[in-house]
Every structure is written in C-alpha cells, then in structure tokens.
Image (cartoon, rainbow, N blue to C red):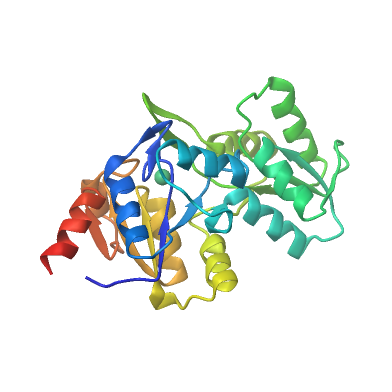
Length: 260
Ligand SMILES: [Mg+2]
C-alpha cells in the first residue's frame, strides 16, 4: 500500500454522521497521527467556521490544527476575492460563509443590487431568505453556490444539502450557479499550494463518489472510497472512472496496509 504525506478526509459520512463518530475513520486518523502524519479535512459544509469544525472533531476525539481544515465557504470566498475583487456581495448561509467573506475583506451588502450572490446552507432558512435569493439573482448578481450537494447524511437518514436549495433558486430564476465545493478540485489545490505537496503525495478519502472521489480524480490524485455514507459500493462499481481503492471502511484499509 502506498504511503502518502497528505491524507485528505471528507467529514460528513466519512469521519462522522451528525454528531456520531464513524469509529473506523477515527481509529485510522489516530493511527496516522501516531505515525506523525497530521491529516487534512475537506468539507463541502459551508455552515461552520474552522473553529466550529475543530470543535466537532474534538467532540469525537480528534484533534485537528486549524490550518488543516478546508471548507467550501473558505474556498468560495477565495474564488470571489480572486475573480470579483470589487464586487458588492450578498450572501445566504450561516457563520461559516460570513466569517470567510469577512476574513478576506469582501464587501458584504444586504440588497438586491449586489454584484455577486454567494449561497451556502442556512439551517434557519425562511421563505423570505429564499425569495431574496431569487430576486437578487434575477436582478443580475453572479450566482455562486458553495456546493451542489443535494443531500447529506445525519444520524437518522438524509437531509437537504445546499444543492437542493440552489436548485430551487435555479428553478425560479433560470440561472445555473457556479459551484465551488467538491467535485471542483479548488480545495485540494489550496492544500497543495498552501502546504507544498506534490500530487503524488496526496490522497482524497470520502463516502460520496460524485463529490469527494471526482474532486480527487479531477485534481489528479489517488482516491479512497469508503462505504460509510452517501454512495453505496455497488453504485461505485458502475462508474466509468473508479476510485483508486474501494473499501468498506478505514478499518478495512488499515487491514490491507497491515497485510502488505
Ligand atoms: Mg461526505
């Protein structure tokens, strides 16, 4: 089995489900840390700040440095800063997206005259919020969504992701958003650039073929699919481009390593 320098873990459905740990992943992360390797965490979840993500991991027994946490909120703000530096930005979403926008000094406004509309998941969503989103996009704002995930798992099943809400706005306005989160390779690119890794040093680990695994494939790095979340293994077999490795969970991956 190949040893990597940067193990990039998806979070929801890979490391935890809601507040519950996926113990096999936690054990593998501890195993890496015991080898002196600090993993990275790459999430399409835009609702949490890096500090909140750190707290969620701490609650299941994982210590993670802030600079190893990458969210689609952070990548979205960086994308807007790069491509629309002067834009007036209206946003929908929770702390994570606002914090990311403020950290980069984006000009945040609350009017339909905005130049860019940044959309992340808002768990306190009201009809007014969605109506304002539709009106802002109709009046010409560039529509950028943190991620296109239609659903994600919690302790009891699947709940709507930002992609479901973005599709609603798309349905009303006829405008398709630019999606920043996985399967876009933007977050993996940031890890490589900010920490100085070569592609052959990196592996992306996730439960969702259409986001996690595709982001790794598009970036050109190895991928490990775990059967602990969104995409069941039997569906992965039908995909035209398979992950590098498909395992039931990270205990199985550790067993493969031990058998070599
Ligand atoms: Mg996931």
